[in-house]
Structure formats: C-alpha cells, structure tokens
Length: 73
Image (cartoon, rainbow, N blue to C red; front, side):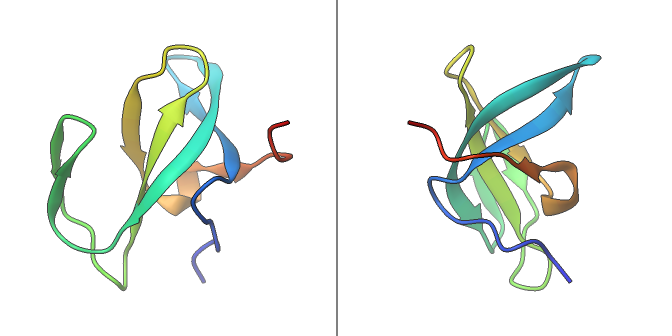
C-alpha cells in the first residue's frame, strides 16, 4: 500500500549520497510535467512533487523513496 502523504508534509529522501529534506507540494496522479521532466504518474502509482528546504528547487519522487518527518514549524 502506498504511503499517505499530503501537501505540506515534511519529508526526507536520499539525494547524491546525502539526505535531503523538504515539503510535499502536490500529489501527481496523471502524466504531467513537473520537476523539470515529464512524469508518468497515475492514480494507482502516484508520485509527489517536493520542494527542497536547502535549495528551494523542486523534484518528483515515488512514495517509497520518501520518509515522513515531523511537521515544519
């Protein structure tokens, strides 16, 4: 079963050998352009657009690559 992530959730992921932290911006459930590329998301296999706290850049990740962290203050 896919993780239940929502807009505003604080998450972490592995990026270039270290751990990045950011915020979920939106859940993608259809083929769309996000994070600088075309994403083949679907309702059965959603992906999440996240914004990095460090760089402010956005990226798209599958739910299994994201780990929920505590809410940002």
